[in-house]
Length: 240
Image (cartoon, rainbow, N blue to C red):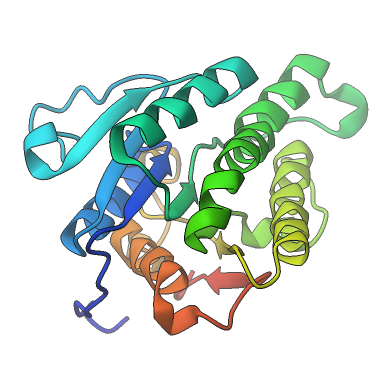
């Protein structure tokens, strides 16, 4: 894969909300939008424990703790962000998790509900409550689906189901907000994160996509350069 090169995106005077901000992809998106000049509201259920984290008020990033599976907490979060910054221009729905599992007949309801809550409910609630403010700014939403959501498969059915839901949520948001709010999603294959390397130590890590490369696509989809694009599910597979 060719070396990544920086490109210019201007998000000055805009406010970006990034959920799942403490994770590998979330922190990369926080960094990308901060570098582009946005005021970044970094959201997660737990604060990052890295002292050098980009989630630092002095860097132009403000951290907000919230349980995105709790509608009252999401409503409070969005209200607080708007009170603090007067607007929302970009919503990056990154909160999520992966779980393998058993065949459907052996899958515990608790395991299914965990994935539904963390992967799909969080994006639904964040989008629902941010939308009135995004409509005022003609803003954008970018969420995270997955390549595996394109078909059924063995071993991680509930995960695939929730990520397919993200694609349909994206298409619905785009259709319902045509001409006001743009909604798109990205579909990673395997992201090069410490957790994935630990889980798959013998894989070809060089073929995996770096979080910063996916963060670039978030920036593109939220930029004026993608003004005519809404309802898209964008592959970000790299060579994986």
